[in-house]
Length: 202
Picture 1 (cartoon, helix red, strand yellow):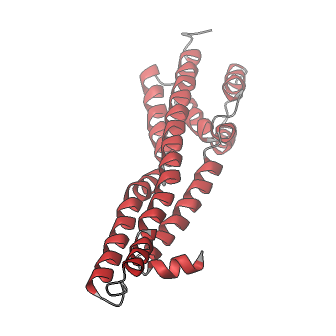
Picture 2 (cartoon, rainbow, N blue to C red):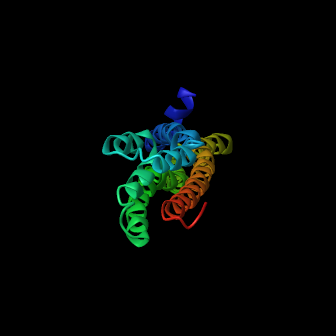
Picture 3 (cartoon, helix red, strand yellow):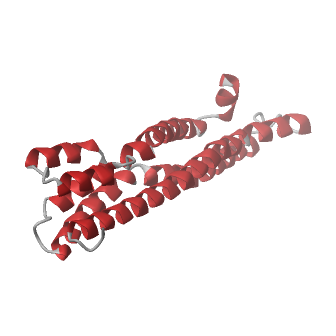
């Protein structure tokens, strides 16, 4: 593997850096975007039960806010539960925008790596081809076998770029869909809380 990296030349080093960043982001997002961590099951029922029993104290709201991202949205709504339905809903929407932004963190970077990696690999191949045809010794002079070997080495960059881009794009699409699903789930649960708090739903 190290011999391939050496043979591919300097353009492969940015690709190696991109691959390390992509792996780190995939691991980080896979850890952070766990559904049980963001929207814990049974949290809505627990919050509604506390609300009906009159246990919505400032200390309870702080604990709820620190509990999870969904808890942060519920806490924002319950802080304004004595206001009108519209005010409570606006508070939830503001908290929801902050949570959505946090859920989408690093996804743009991962998507950029997925899109740019093939171009970086192609750039490395073009540089390698220029070096081969620009220097007779690099291509082995008139020896077709040496020339073919030089071209295959230049293509390492394109291959490596695709190896990075494919899993990065798959991970990006997966995390993008997961974030959208989590946001919709939180929106529905927050709407239920508003309706239950204002007696519009049993």
